[in-house]
Image (cartoon, rainbow over all chains, first blue to last red; front, side, top):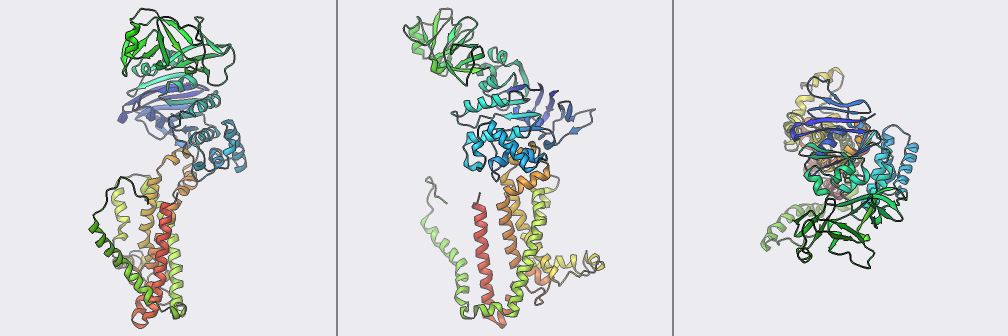
Length: 350
Length: 263
């Protein structure tokens, strides 16, 4: 029981095969123009591919191509809901009636649909907005309501099209956490170009480039050992995996990293500490008396990066100024210390 | 309208022809107001012939507006939301009454619904005589007014786009549900302004009506026909009735402007 997708759209040169098990979230990562939207459009039944076999829980939704009896289930009959960048709440309905729209369309009574809607609004934490008009809520609140609306339709598959791309960065961590909670046992195809979304929300990742899947596997593997240029750029973010112990990340090698937890991890939870290369300072000797995180590393490579010097080790990277690089007399193979402030490290449960 | 800070000024001399043009449009309206016999205004308006014409005009225009909505909404939807071969040509032909002289429209209707017309026989078998009846007035008005509603609504549909409709469909709404609960509410301002335009065009219809329906008091003589008939025999009455149509026109402009600037 799952979502199986294999479709080619010749006009856009997109030929992709995917499978999502029931209850699993697959992140589809890729640069603009890689064909992510095409995959979503075919899955939602908005675009007819040249040759395809798309099925959900064993039910053929789109079948086309030579020698096959063509099937095209219309969008409203697919049990596939779409959540896009913009909330697109119907402006003439209250927030509550927006969320009740799916159940109503599937034949629920008005009272039952509204009860379902209230449940989902509470689930995403905006129940107090039920009677407002979409024009009277903020972008982040509207997107929460849009999440509730998609879930209230009880889809067999939920398509998320960069659900946080249009939002203020201040509200994305909260929404990401909410999504992580409500999507936990749902079958989800998440399109994103943000590695963090994939890291926090997805079980597996497929990387799309030029209309083809170029890398595919467990989220942690794809992001830590990128096999495509695009994921390599994404993975510019430093990610250190470990477990949550005594308010810090304890890595397998015994290192202790302090950071700001995103959410409320419990001791023993698998977590990942994420920090950008620009948050890393590089020293020859550990700076004394400071409670900061110190990582002893051996640079393998120095390269120019956006006017700075990117110092790479096997797993981490740091961006420092050319002057600092010269003063440190950095060279590959010499041991140095990477120092990161706890405030610069975000810890996510995975 | 707010003036944008980066706007380049217009040449000063251009104000002169602009004012002249505005005066050209507004002065005749002022003339009507000045010549209106205010002391006898109500008497003129309520004289049997005037009252008949006014009632007939309101009745037929309301009916033809309803017909325009019933036929025009599906037409606009098909033009805006589907694509098929020859759609462009069809759109142009359907909108022809916008530019066709109304008299020609009347002749065309006569040879379609008249006794010897294309469909005349069919109607005769059914025991209905269309030409020179109130029905003919409604048909003539619908013929000339329909394109106004279709153009206005098709524009509103295209502006609204299909994004909300796509969301509604993926939430499980059938095409009919999407149409009733999403599409129509979203384009309601466009539909209202289109209907108001169609009503105004129906109210002012003259050429097609007099050709296809004739001018029989209480049956086919609408307000514009009454004004035309009266202008030689009873000029003050013609002016008073004209003022009624001017007021309606001003109201229509106000209503459609509101529809356009609304949400």
